[in-house]
Image 1 (cartoon, rainbow, N blue to C red):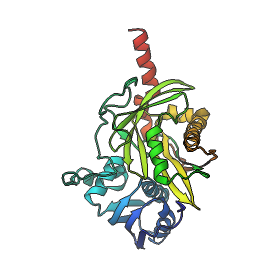
Image 2: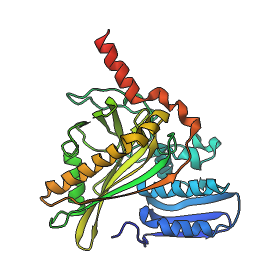
Image 3: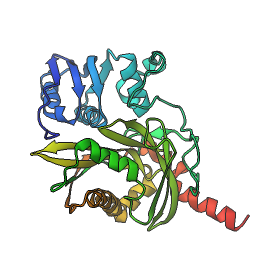
Image 4: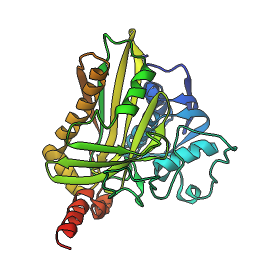
Length: 343
């Protein structure tokens, strides 16, 4: 299925000042969602009723954020209501509750009371990232004890970058492509990147330590697994990471061929990283995800012709987030190295 086509598992109803959502919200709902927004009239506040929402994916959350930014540019505001306990947990885990819920409601609604043995593809919300273990050989720095941050908590311009590779000539199914990405993620990286998953692997709530060599020097950071199931997974960044946001991994079938996709939805975490991305960091990032998808294709024995499409979703800099530089992982890695050299 084309991920941008109309999704029949989702429906939306719009009237003056109200949008009601029903079903499963993915990136495929983009057209339906934006059309509904155009039917809400001219009220300053638009209520988004989520009582009928069964499930939401990271790309679905991206669509919510895009619409929120569009409304903000027009002097309007989106307010979510009718959240189930599970959806409320998702909003908290991704920290989009800070934009869609009134301040007085963010800490009032209780967490979902899951029955014993219940599981979810979404990580439970946490105040700070906790490592279940430190993998052998990894430098544990700038991950544990920090908060996970999303696209709303960063400083720079907001970019959506989508990379795709067709696994033509391979019999790999979408689920097999995702399983291979999970299992071989560290070895699919370019040589300068070292990823250290825990023994639990890429599972909801786990962290992955990253030790990487960049044009600006060594950086120690990581990612938090905010979502993972058999069909997709997503990493969310901690404070101090070069980006504030997430990257999602998925696969789907198109014309009898499996297509694997990597989609980043993030902005530079602080002013220094924003400058770095504009000079060379953005190109370096694009090479990394292209390399990962080429490696995936190679794993299945087929050539990897990777396409990339990028869109600047928000051009404004969030100057109120300039203080994020305090957690800058590049600076903290350098200072940690100096302390070891000159104790």
